[in-house]
Image (cartoon, rainbow, N blue to C red; front, side, top):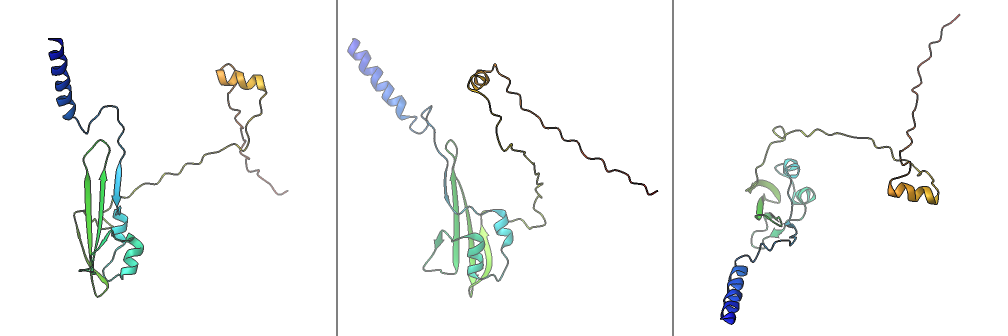
Length: 167
């Protein structure tokens, strides 16, 4: 009877584990990117009647150049996040007499005027050129949290413009 229960339990575990072939808990899955990542800025730089070399400079080398249709360039991008669904985008550029004629694809093309403007924020960070020298015991005390590890702030007085009067 015990062997029957062990065999039954083993078969049951095998059947249950086969149902979860992709989602093993605790396993990290990397993000996979393939192809040419075409951004909206790249698409906005394209203009009709650009040459193939100008388009290649902006967009990069196409992923697929069909030998039977040399005037068609395909840019395919696929992104498969580790724990998500695969996303694929495709842009096709058509040339007539080596000049850009039109663009097709499943990516939305927005005019430059309709694009959302990004606000750029700059921050200045002051990095000290040298660290404060401490002794051996003071370093140990600082590392365990008993020392004085407060940074020394340098206060600068802003020079007030002096008024000069003519006598």
